[in-house]
Length: 131
Image 1 (cartoon, rainbow, N blue to C red):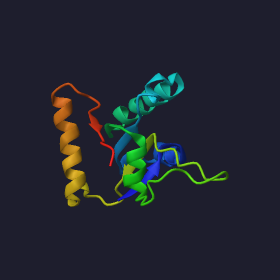
Image 2: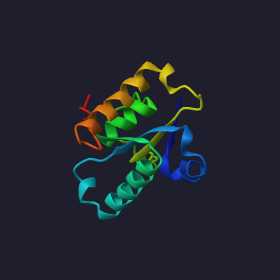
Image 3: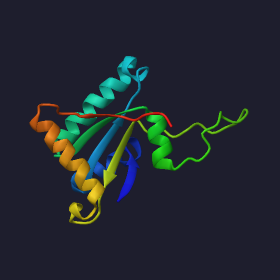
């Protein structure tokens, strides 16, 4: 299983969305007031719905970055010239294998998304706590 940032993998996904099994949309309270980002999320959600891609909304993009990038340094940013953290507002989870059910964690996430849709919650939200 691999992870791709949406903007980097957008062209590839438009050609073959079949390998994408999950879309993570990460935003915090400040991002909720960003109109451009909300429009971007709406377009991504429409694309995912059209292509039967599960969507999961995640609060706390900083914590998501720590989990995905396996950052061990949670301290304050270094002095001037420090690199900006990658933009992980949208992450696509792909599975190049034909059987996505071989990964039990992925299987549980997809079941969670499906159950949420049955309860009319089309984009379930996961609240990631701080460390």
